[in-house]
Length: 125
Image (cartoon, rainbow, N blue to C red; front, side):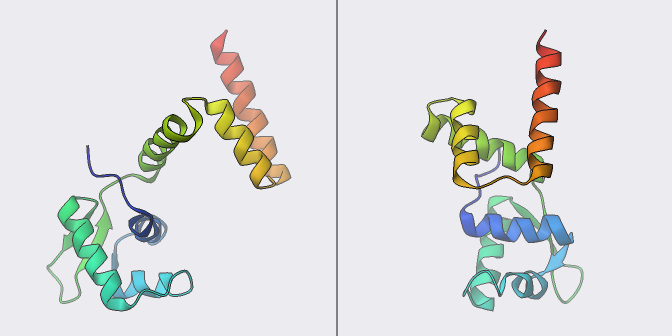
């Protein structure tokens, strides 16, 4: 199992998941409005992520291209599992109720939640 990404690493992974393989400069440009970290900080973090196995660096070109080695859905699942255990005593219901009480869900999100619940209940019978 690969290391669990830190919040800074997750920001970089999100860019790589959204954009696909990217250079440090491209990743940094996407993060400029979200963080005050400089280019060298982004570079160093991505080098550390490569050492940890979170990203892979293609060194064939002058500007190295990085790609995520973790799948977004798997990473989110591991992080949610960890959060449910550590903060909600293993209760997924408590997590969902807290999430819905903290941030208002859109109509589309609520419809998707209802659909997922219906699907879950249908499979549990």
